[in-house]
Structures are given as structure tokens and as C-alpha cells.
Amino acid sequence: MSGSAGSVPAVQRTVAPAAVHRDADARAWLGALRSTGAEREAAAARLHALLLSAARFELVRRRAMLDGTGRETVDDLAVQSADDALSAILVKLDDYRFESRFTTWAYKFAILEAAVRARRRAWQERELPVEPEAWAMFPAPTLDPAEDLELREQLKVILDAVRTELSPHQREVLGALVLADVPIDVLAERLSTTRGALYKTLHDARRKLRAAVGTES
Amino acid sequence: MTDSHRDTERLLAGLLGPSGPELTCEQCFELLDVYVEHELAGENADRRVPGMREHLRGCPACAEEHESLRDLLRQLA
Image 1 (tube, each protein chain N blue to C red):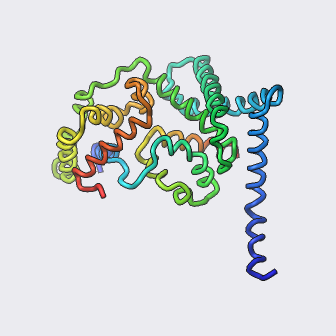
Image 2 (tube, rainbow over the protein chains, first blue to last red):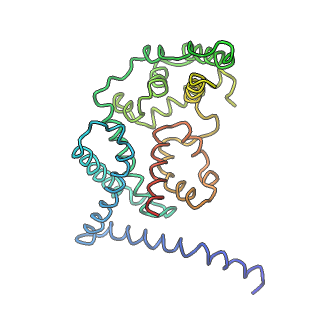
Image 3 (tube, rainbow over the protein chains, first blue to last red):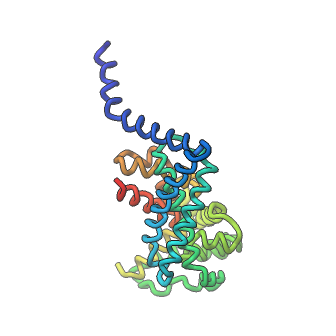
């Protein structure tokens, strides 16, 4: 064996065991979750416990948003999040590609479910800003006239472009998400659409505004 | 720099968004686990998942979920 060929296993000795262990662990999860009877039930229960801990972790991070929400309600939100995350995972097992640990892949479902619930809960009794009100909140007048000349100019160009370049729907979405800080999941629920569709609208609106200020490549 | 200046700069960043190519929210979710594991391993996550960093700059919800997954894994490590 040549010297250069001999250097390859040295790298593999460092990297391969972790990957092999990760893949074996993932195959065990997938095998159990795809099985039937007691084995599947046990695997699903074990995964649900992990998802519940991830959902609780997320809801603790969002506690300021959930101020005034009772402990029992928060725990219900965690259980609902874990339930829905588990359901989504069981449907999407074929989407797992062995590119991360199986548990990392699974945790993101629980975090998403809990984060969305927290945002919606925080906004459940709040009205969405009507579009003209959101734009009326634009804080340009508070800027120092001399010091912030460049910012004021840029704001003026952007506001003009908002009025002349954006569609009413783009103005509504941009105003709610950026000016009024409405969480995208809340806006999606109120407008009966998806986060992805709203972000596409936001992305297209931003591209028009960047073109207006000359920063779009 | 005044608070008003900083607020306006932050607002401008929100209005204009990231200028580079970015993932969609769906792609972000699909690759979030891979990205975070590369970050925590000290590897070049942005080279592994191009467009993720830009999307996280432009999407507060995805950015929150990214931070949560990263911090959860750190806590479990």
C-alpha cells in the first residue's frame, strides 16, 4: 500500500465511527417506527417523550410571549405540539435522509409546532393592524434632520416605492410583518394561507424596494 | 448613534431584506437539522447549506426556530 493511500484511513478513523453510529441509531428508530404492534408503540412513545421535552424547551423560551397563560394551558400546548410533531414525523419518515441525527431531524418538528402555537396564542385576542394604520407608524419624523440625511432619503424612496410599486396585497403583508411585527404564522392563519406563500410575497415586495433604492443586483 | 437611528436602520433591514440568494421557508425547515449540526460541529454550515444564512436574516420566525434547535442541542450535548 502506498503512503498516500495509507493517509485515507487516518481520516476515516476520525470521522467514520460517529457517522456509523448515527446511521445505526437512525436505522433502529426507522425500523421500530415502521414495525407493528408493541415494538412500534414503544418506539412512538419514546419519540413522543423526546418531542415533548423539545416542545417544553421551546415554550419556556417563549414565556414572555405567553405571559398570563396558565401553567396547565402551557403544558397542554406542549402535549399538543408533541402529538402533532409525532404525527407529522410518522408521515414523513421517508423524507429523513441520514444527513443529521434522527433525533435532531425529529426535534425540529416539535420546535416548529410549539413555536407556532406560542405565536398564535399570544396574538389570539389581538386585532391585526389595518394596512394604512401600519404605514402610519413609520417613524421617519423622529430622525435627526442633519445627522440622518442619508437614512431619511432612503426612507423617502422606500415609502414612495411602497405606494407606487407594490400591490395592495404586498403592502398589506409587508406592513403587517415588518412594521407591525405580526408573526408570520399568525398572519398566515388570519389570511388563510401558508408561511411559505407569505414569505414569497414578502420576498417579492422586498426585491421591488431594493430595486427602488438601487441595491438589487 | 441615536435609538431612533438604530430603530430606523433595523426597520430598513426588515423592509429591504437580505440581498443575496436565499432559501424558502420550506427549504429552510427541510435543511435546518443539517445546518445546525454542521454549525455545532464547527464546520462550514453556510457552504453545506447555501442560502440558509440569508434566509435566517430575512425571516424572524425561521431564525427563532433555528436558535431554538441549536440551543436545545447544545443543552443536550
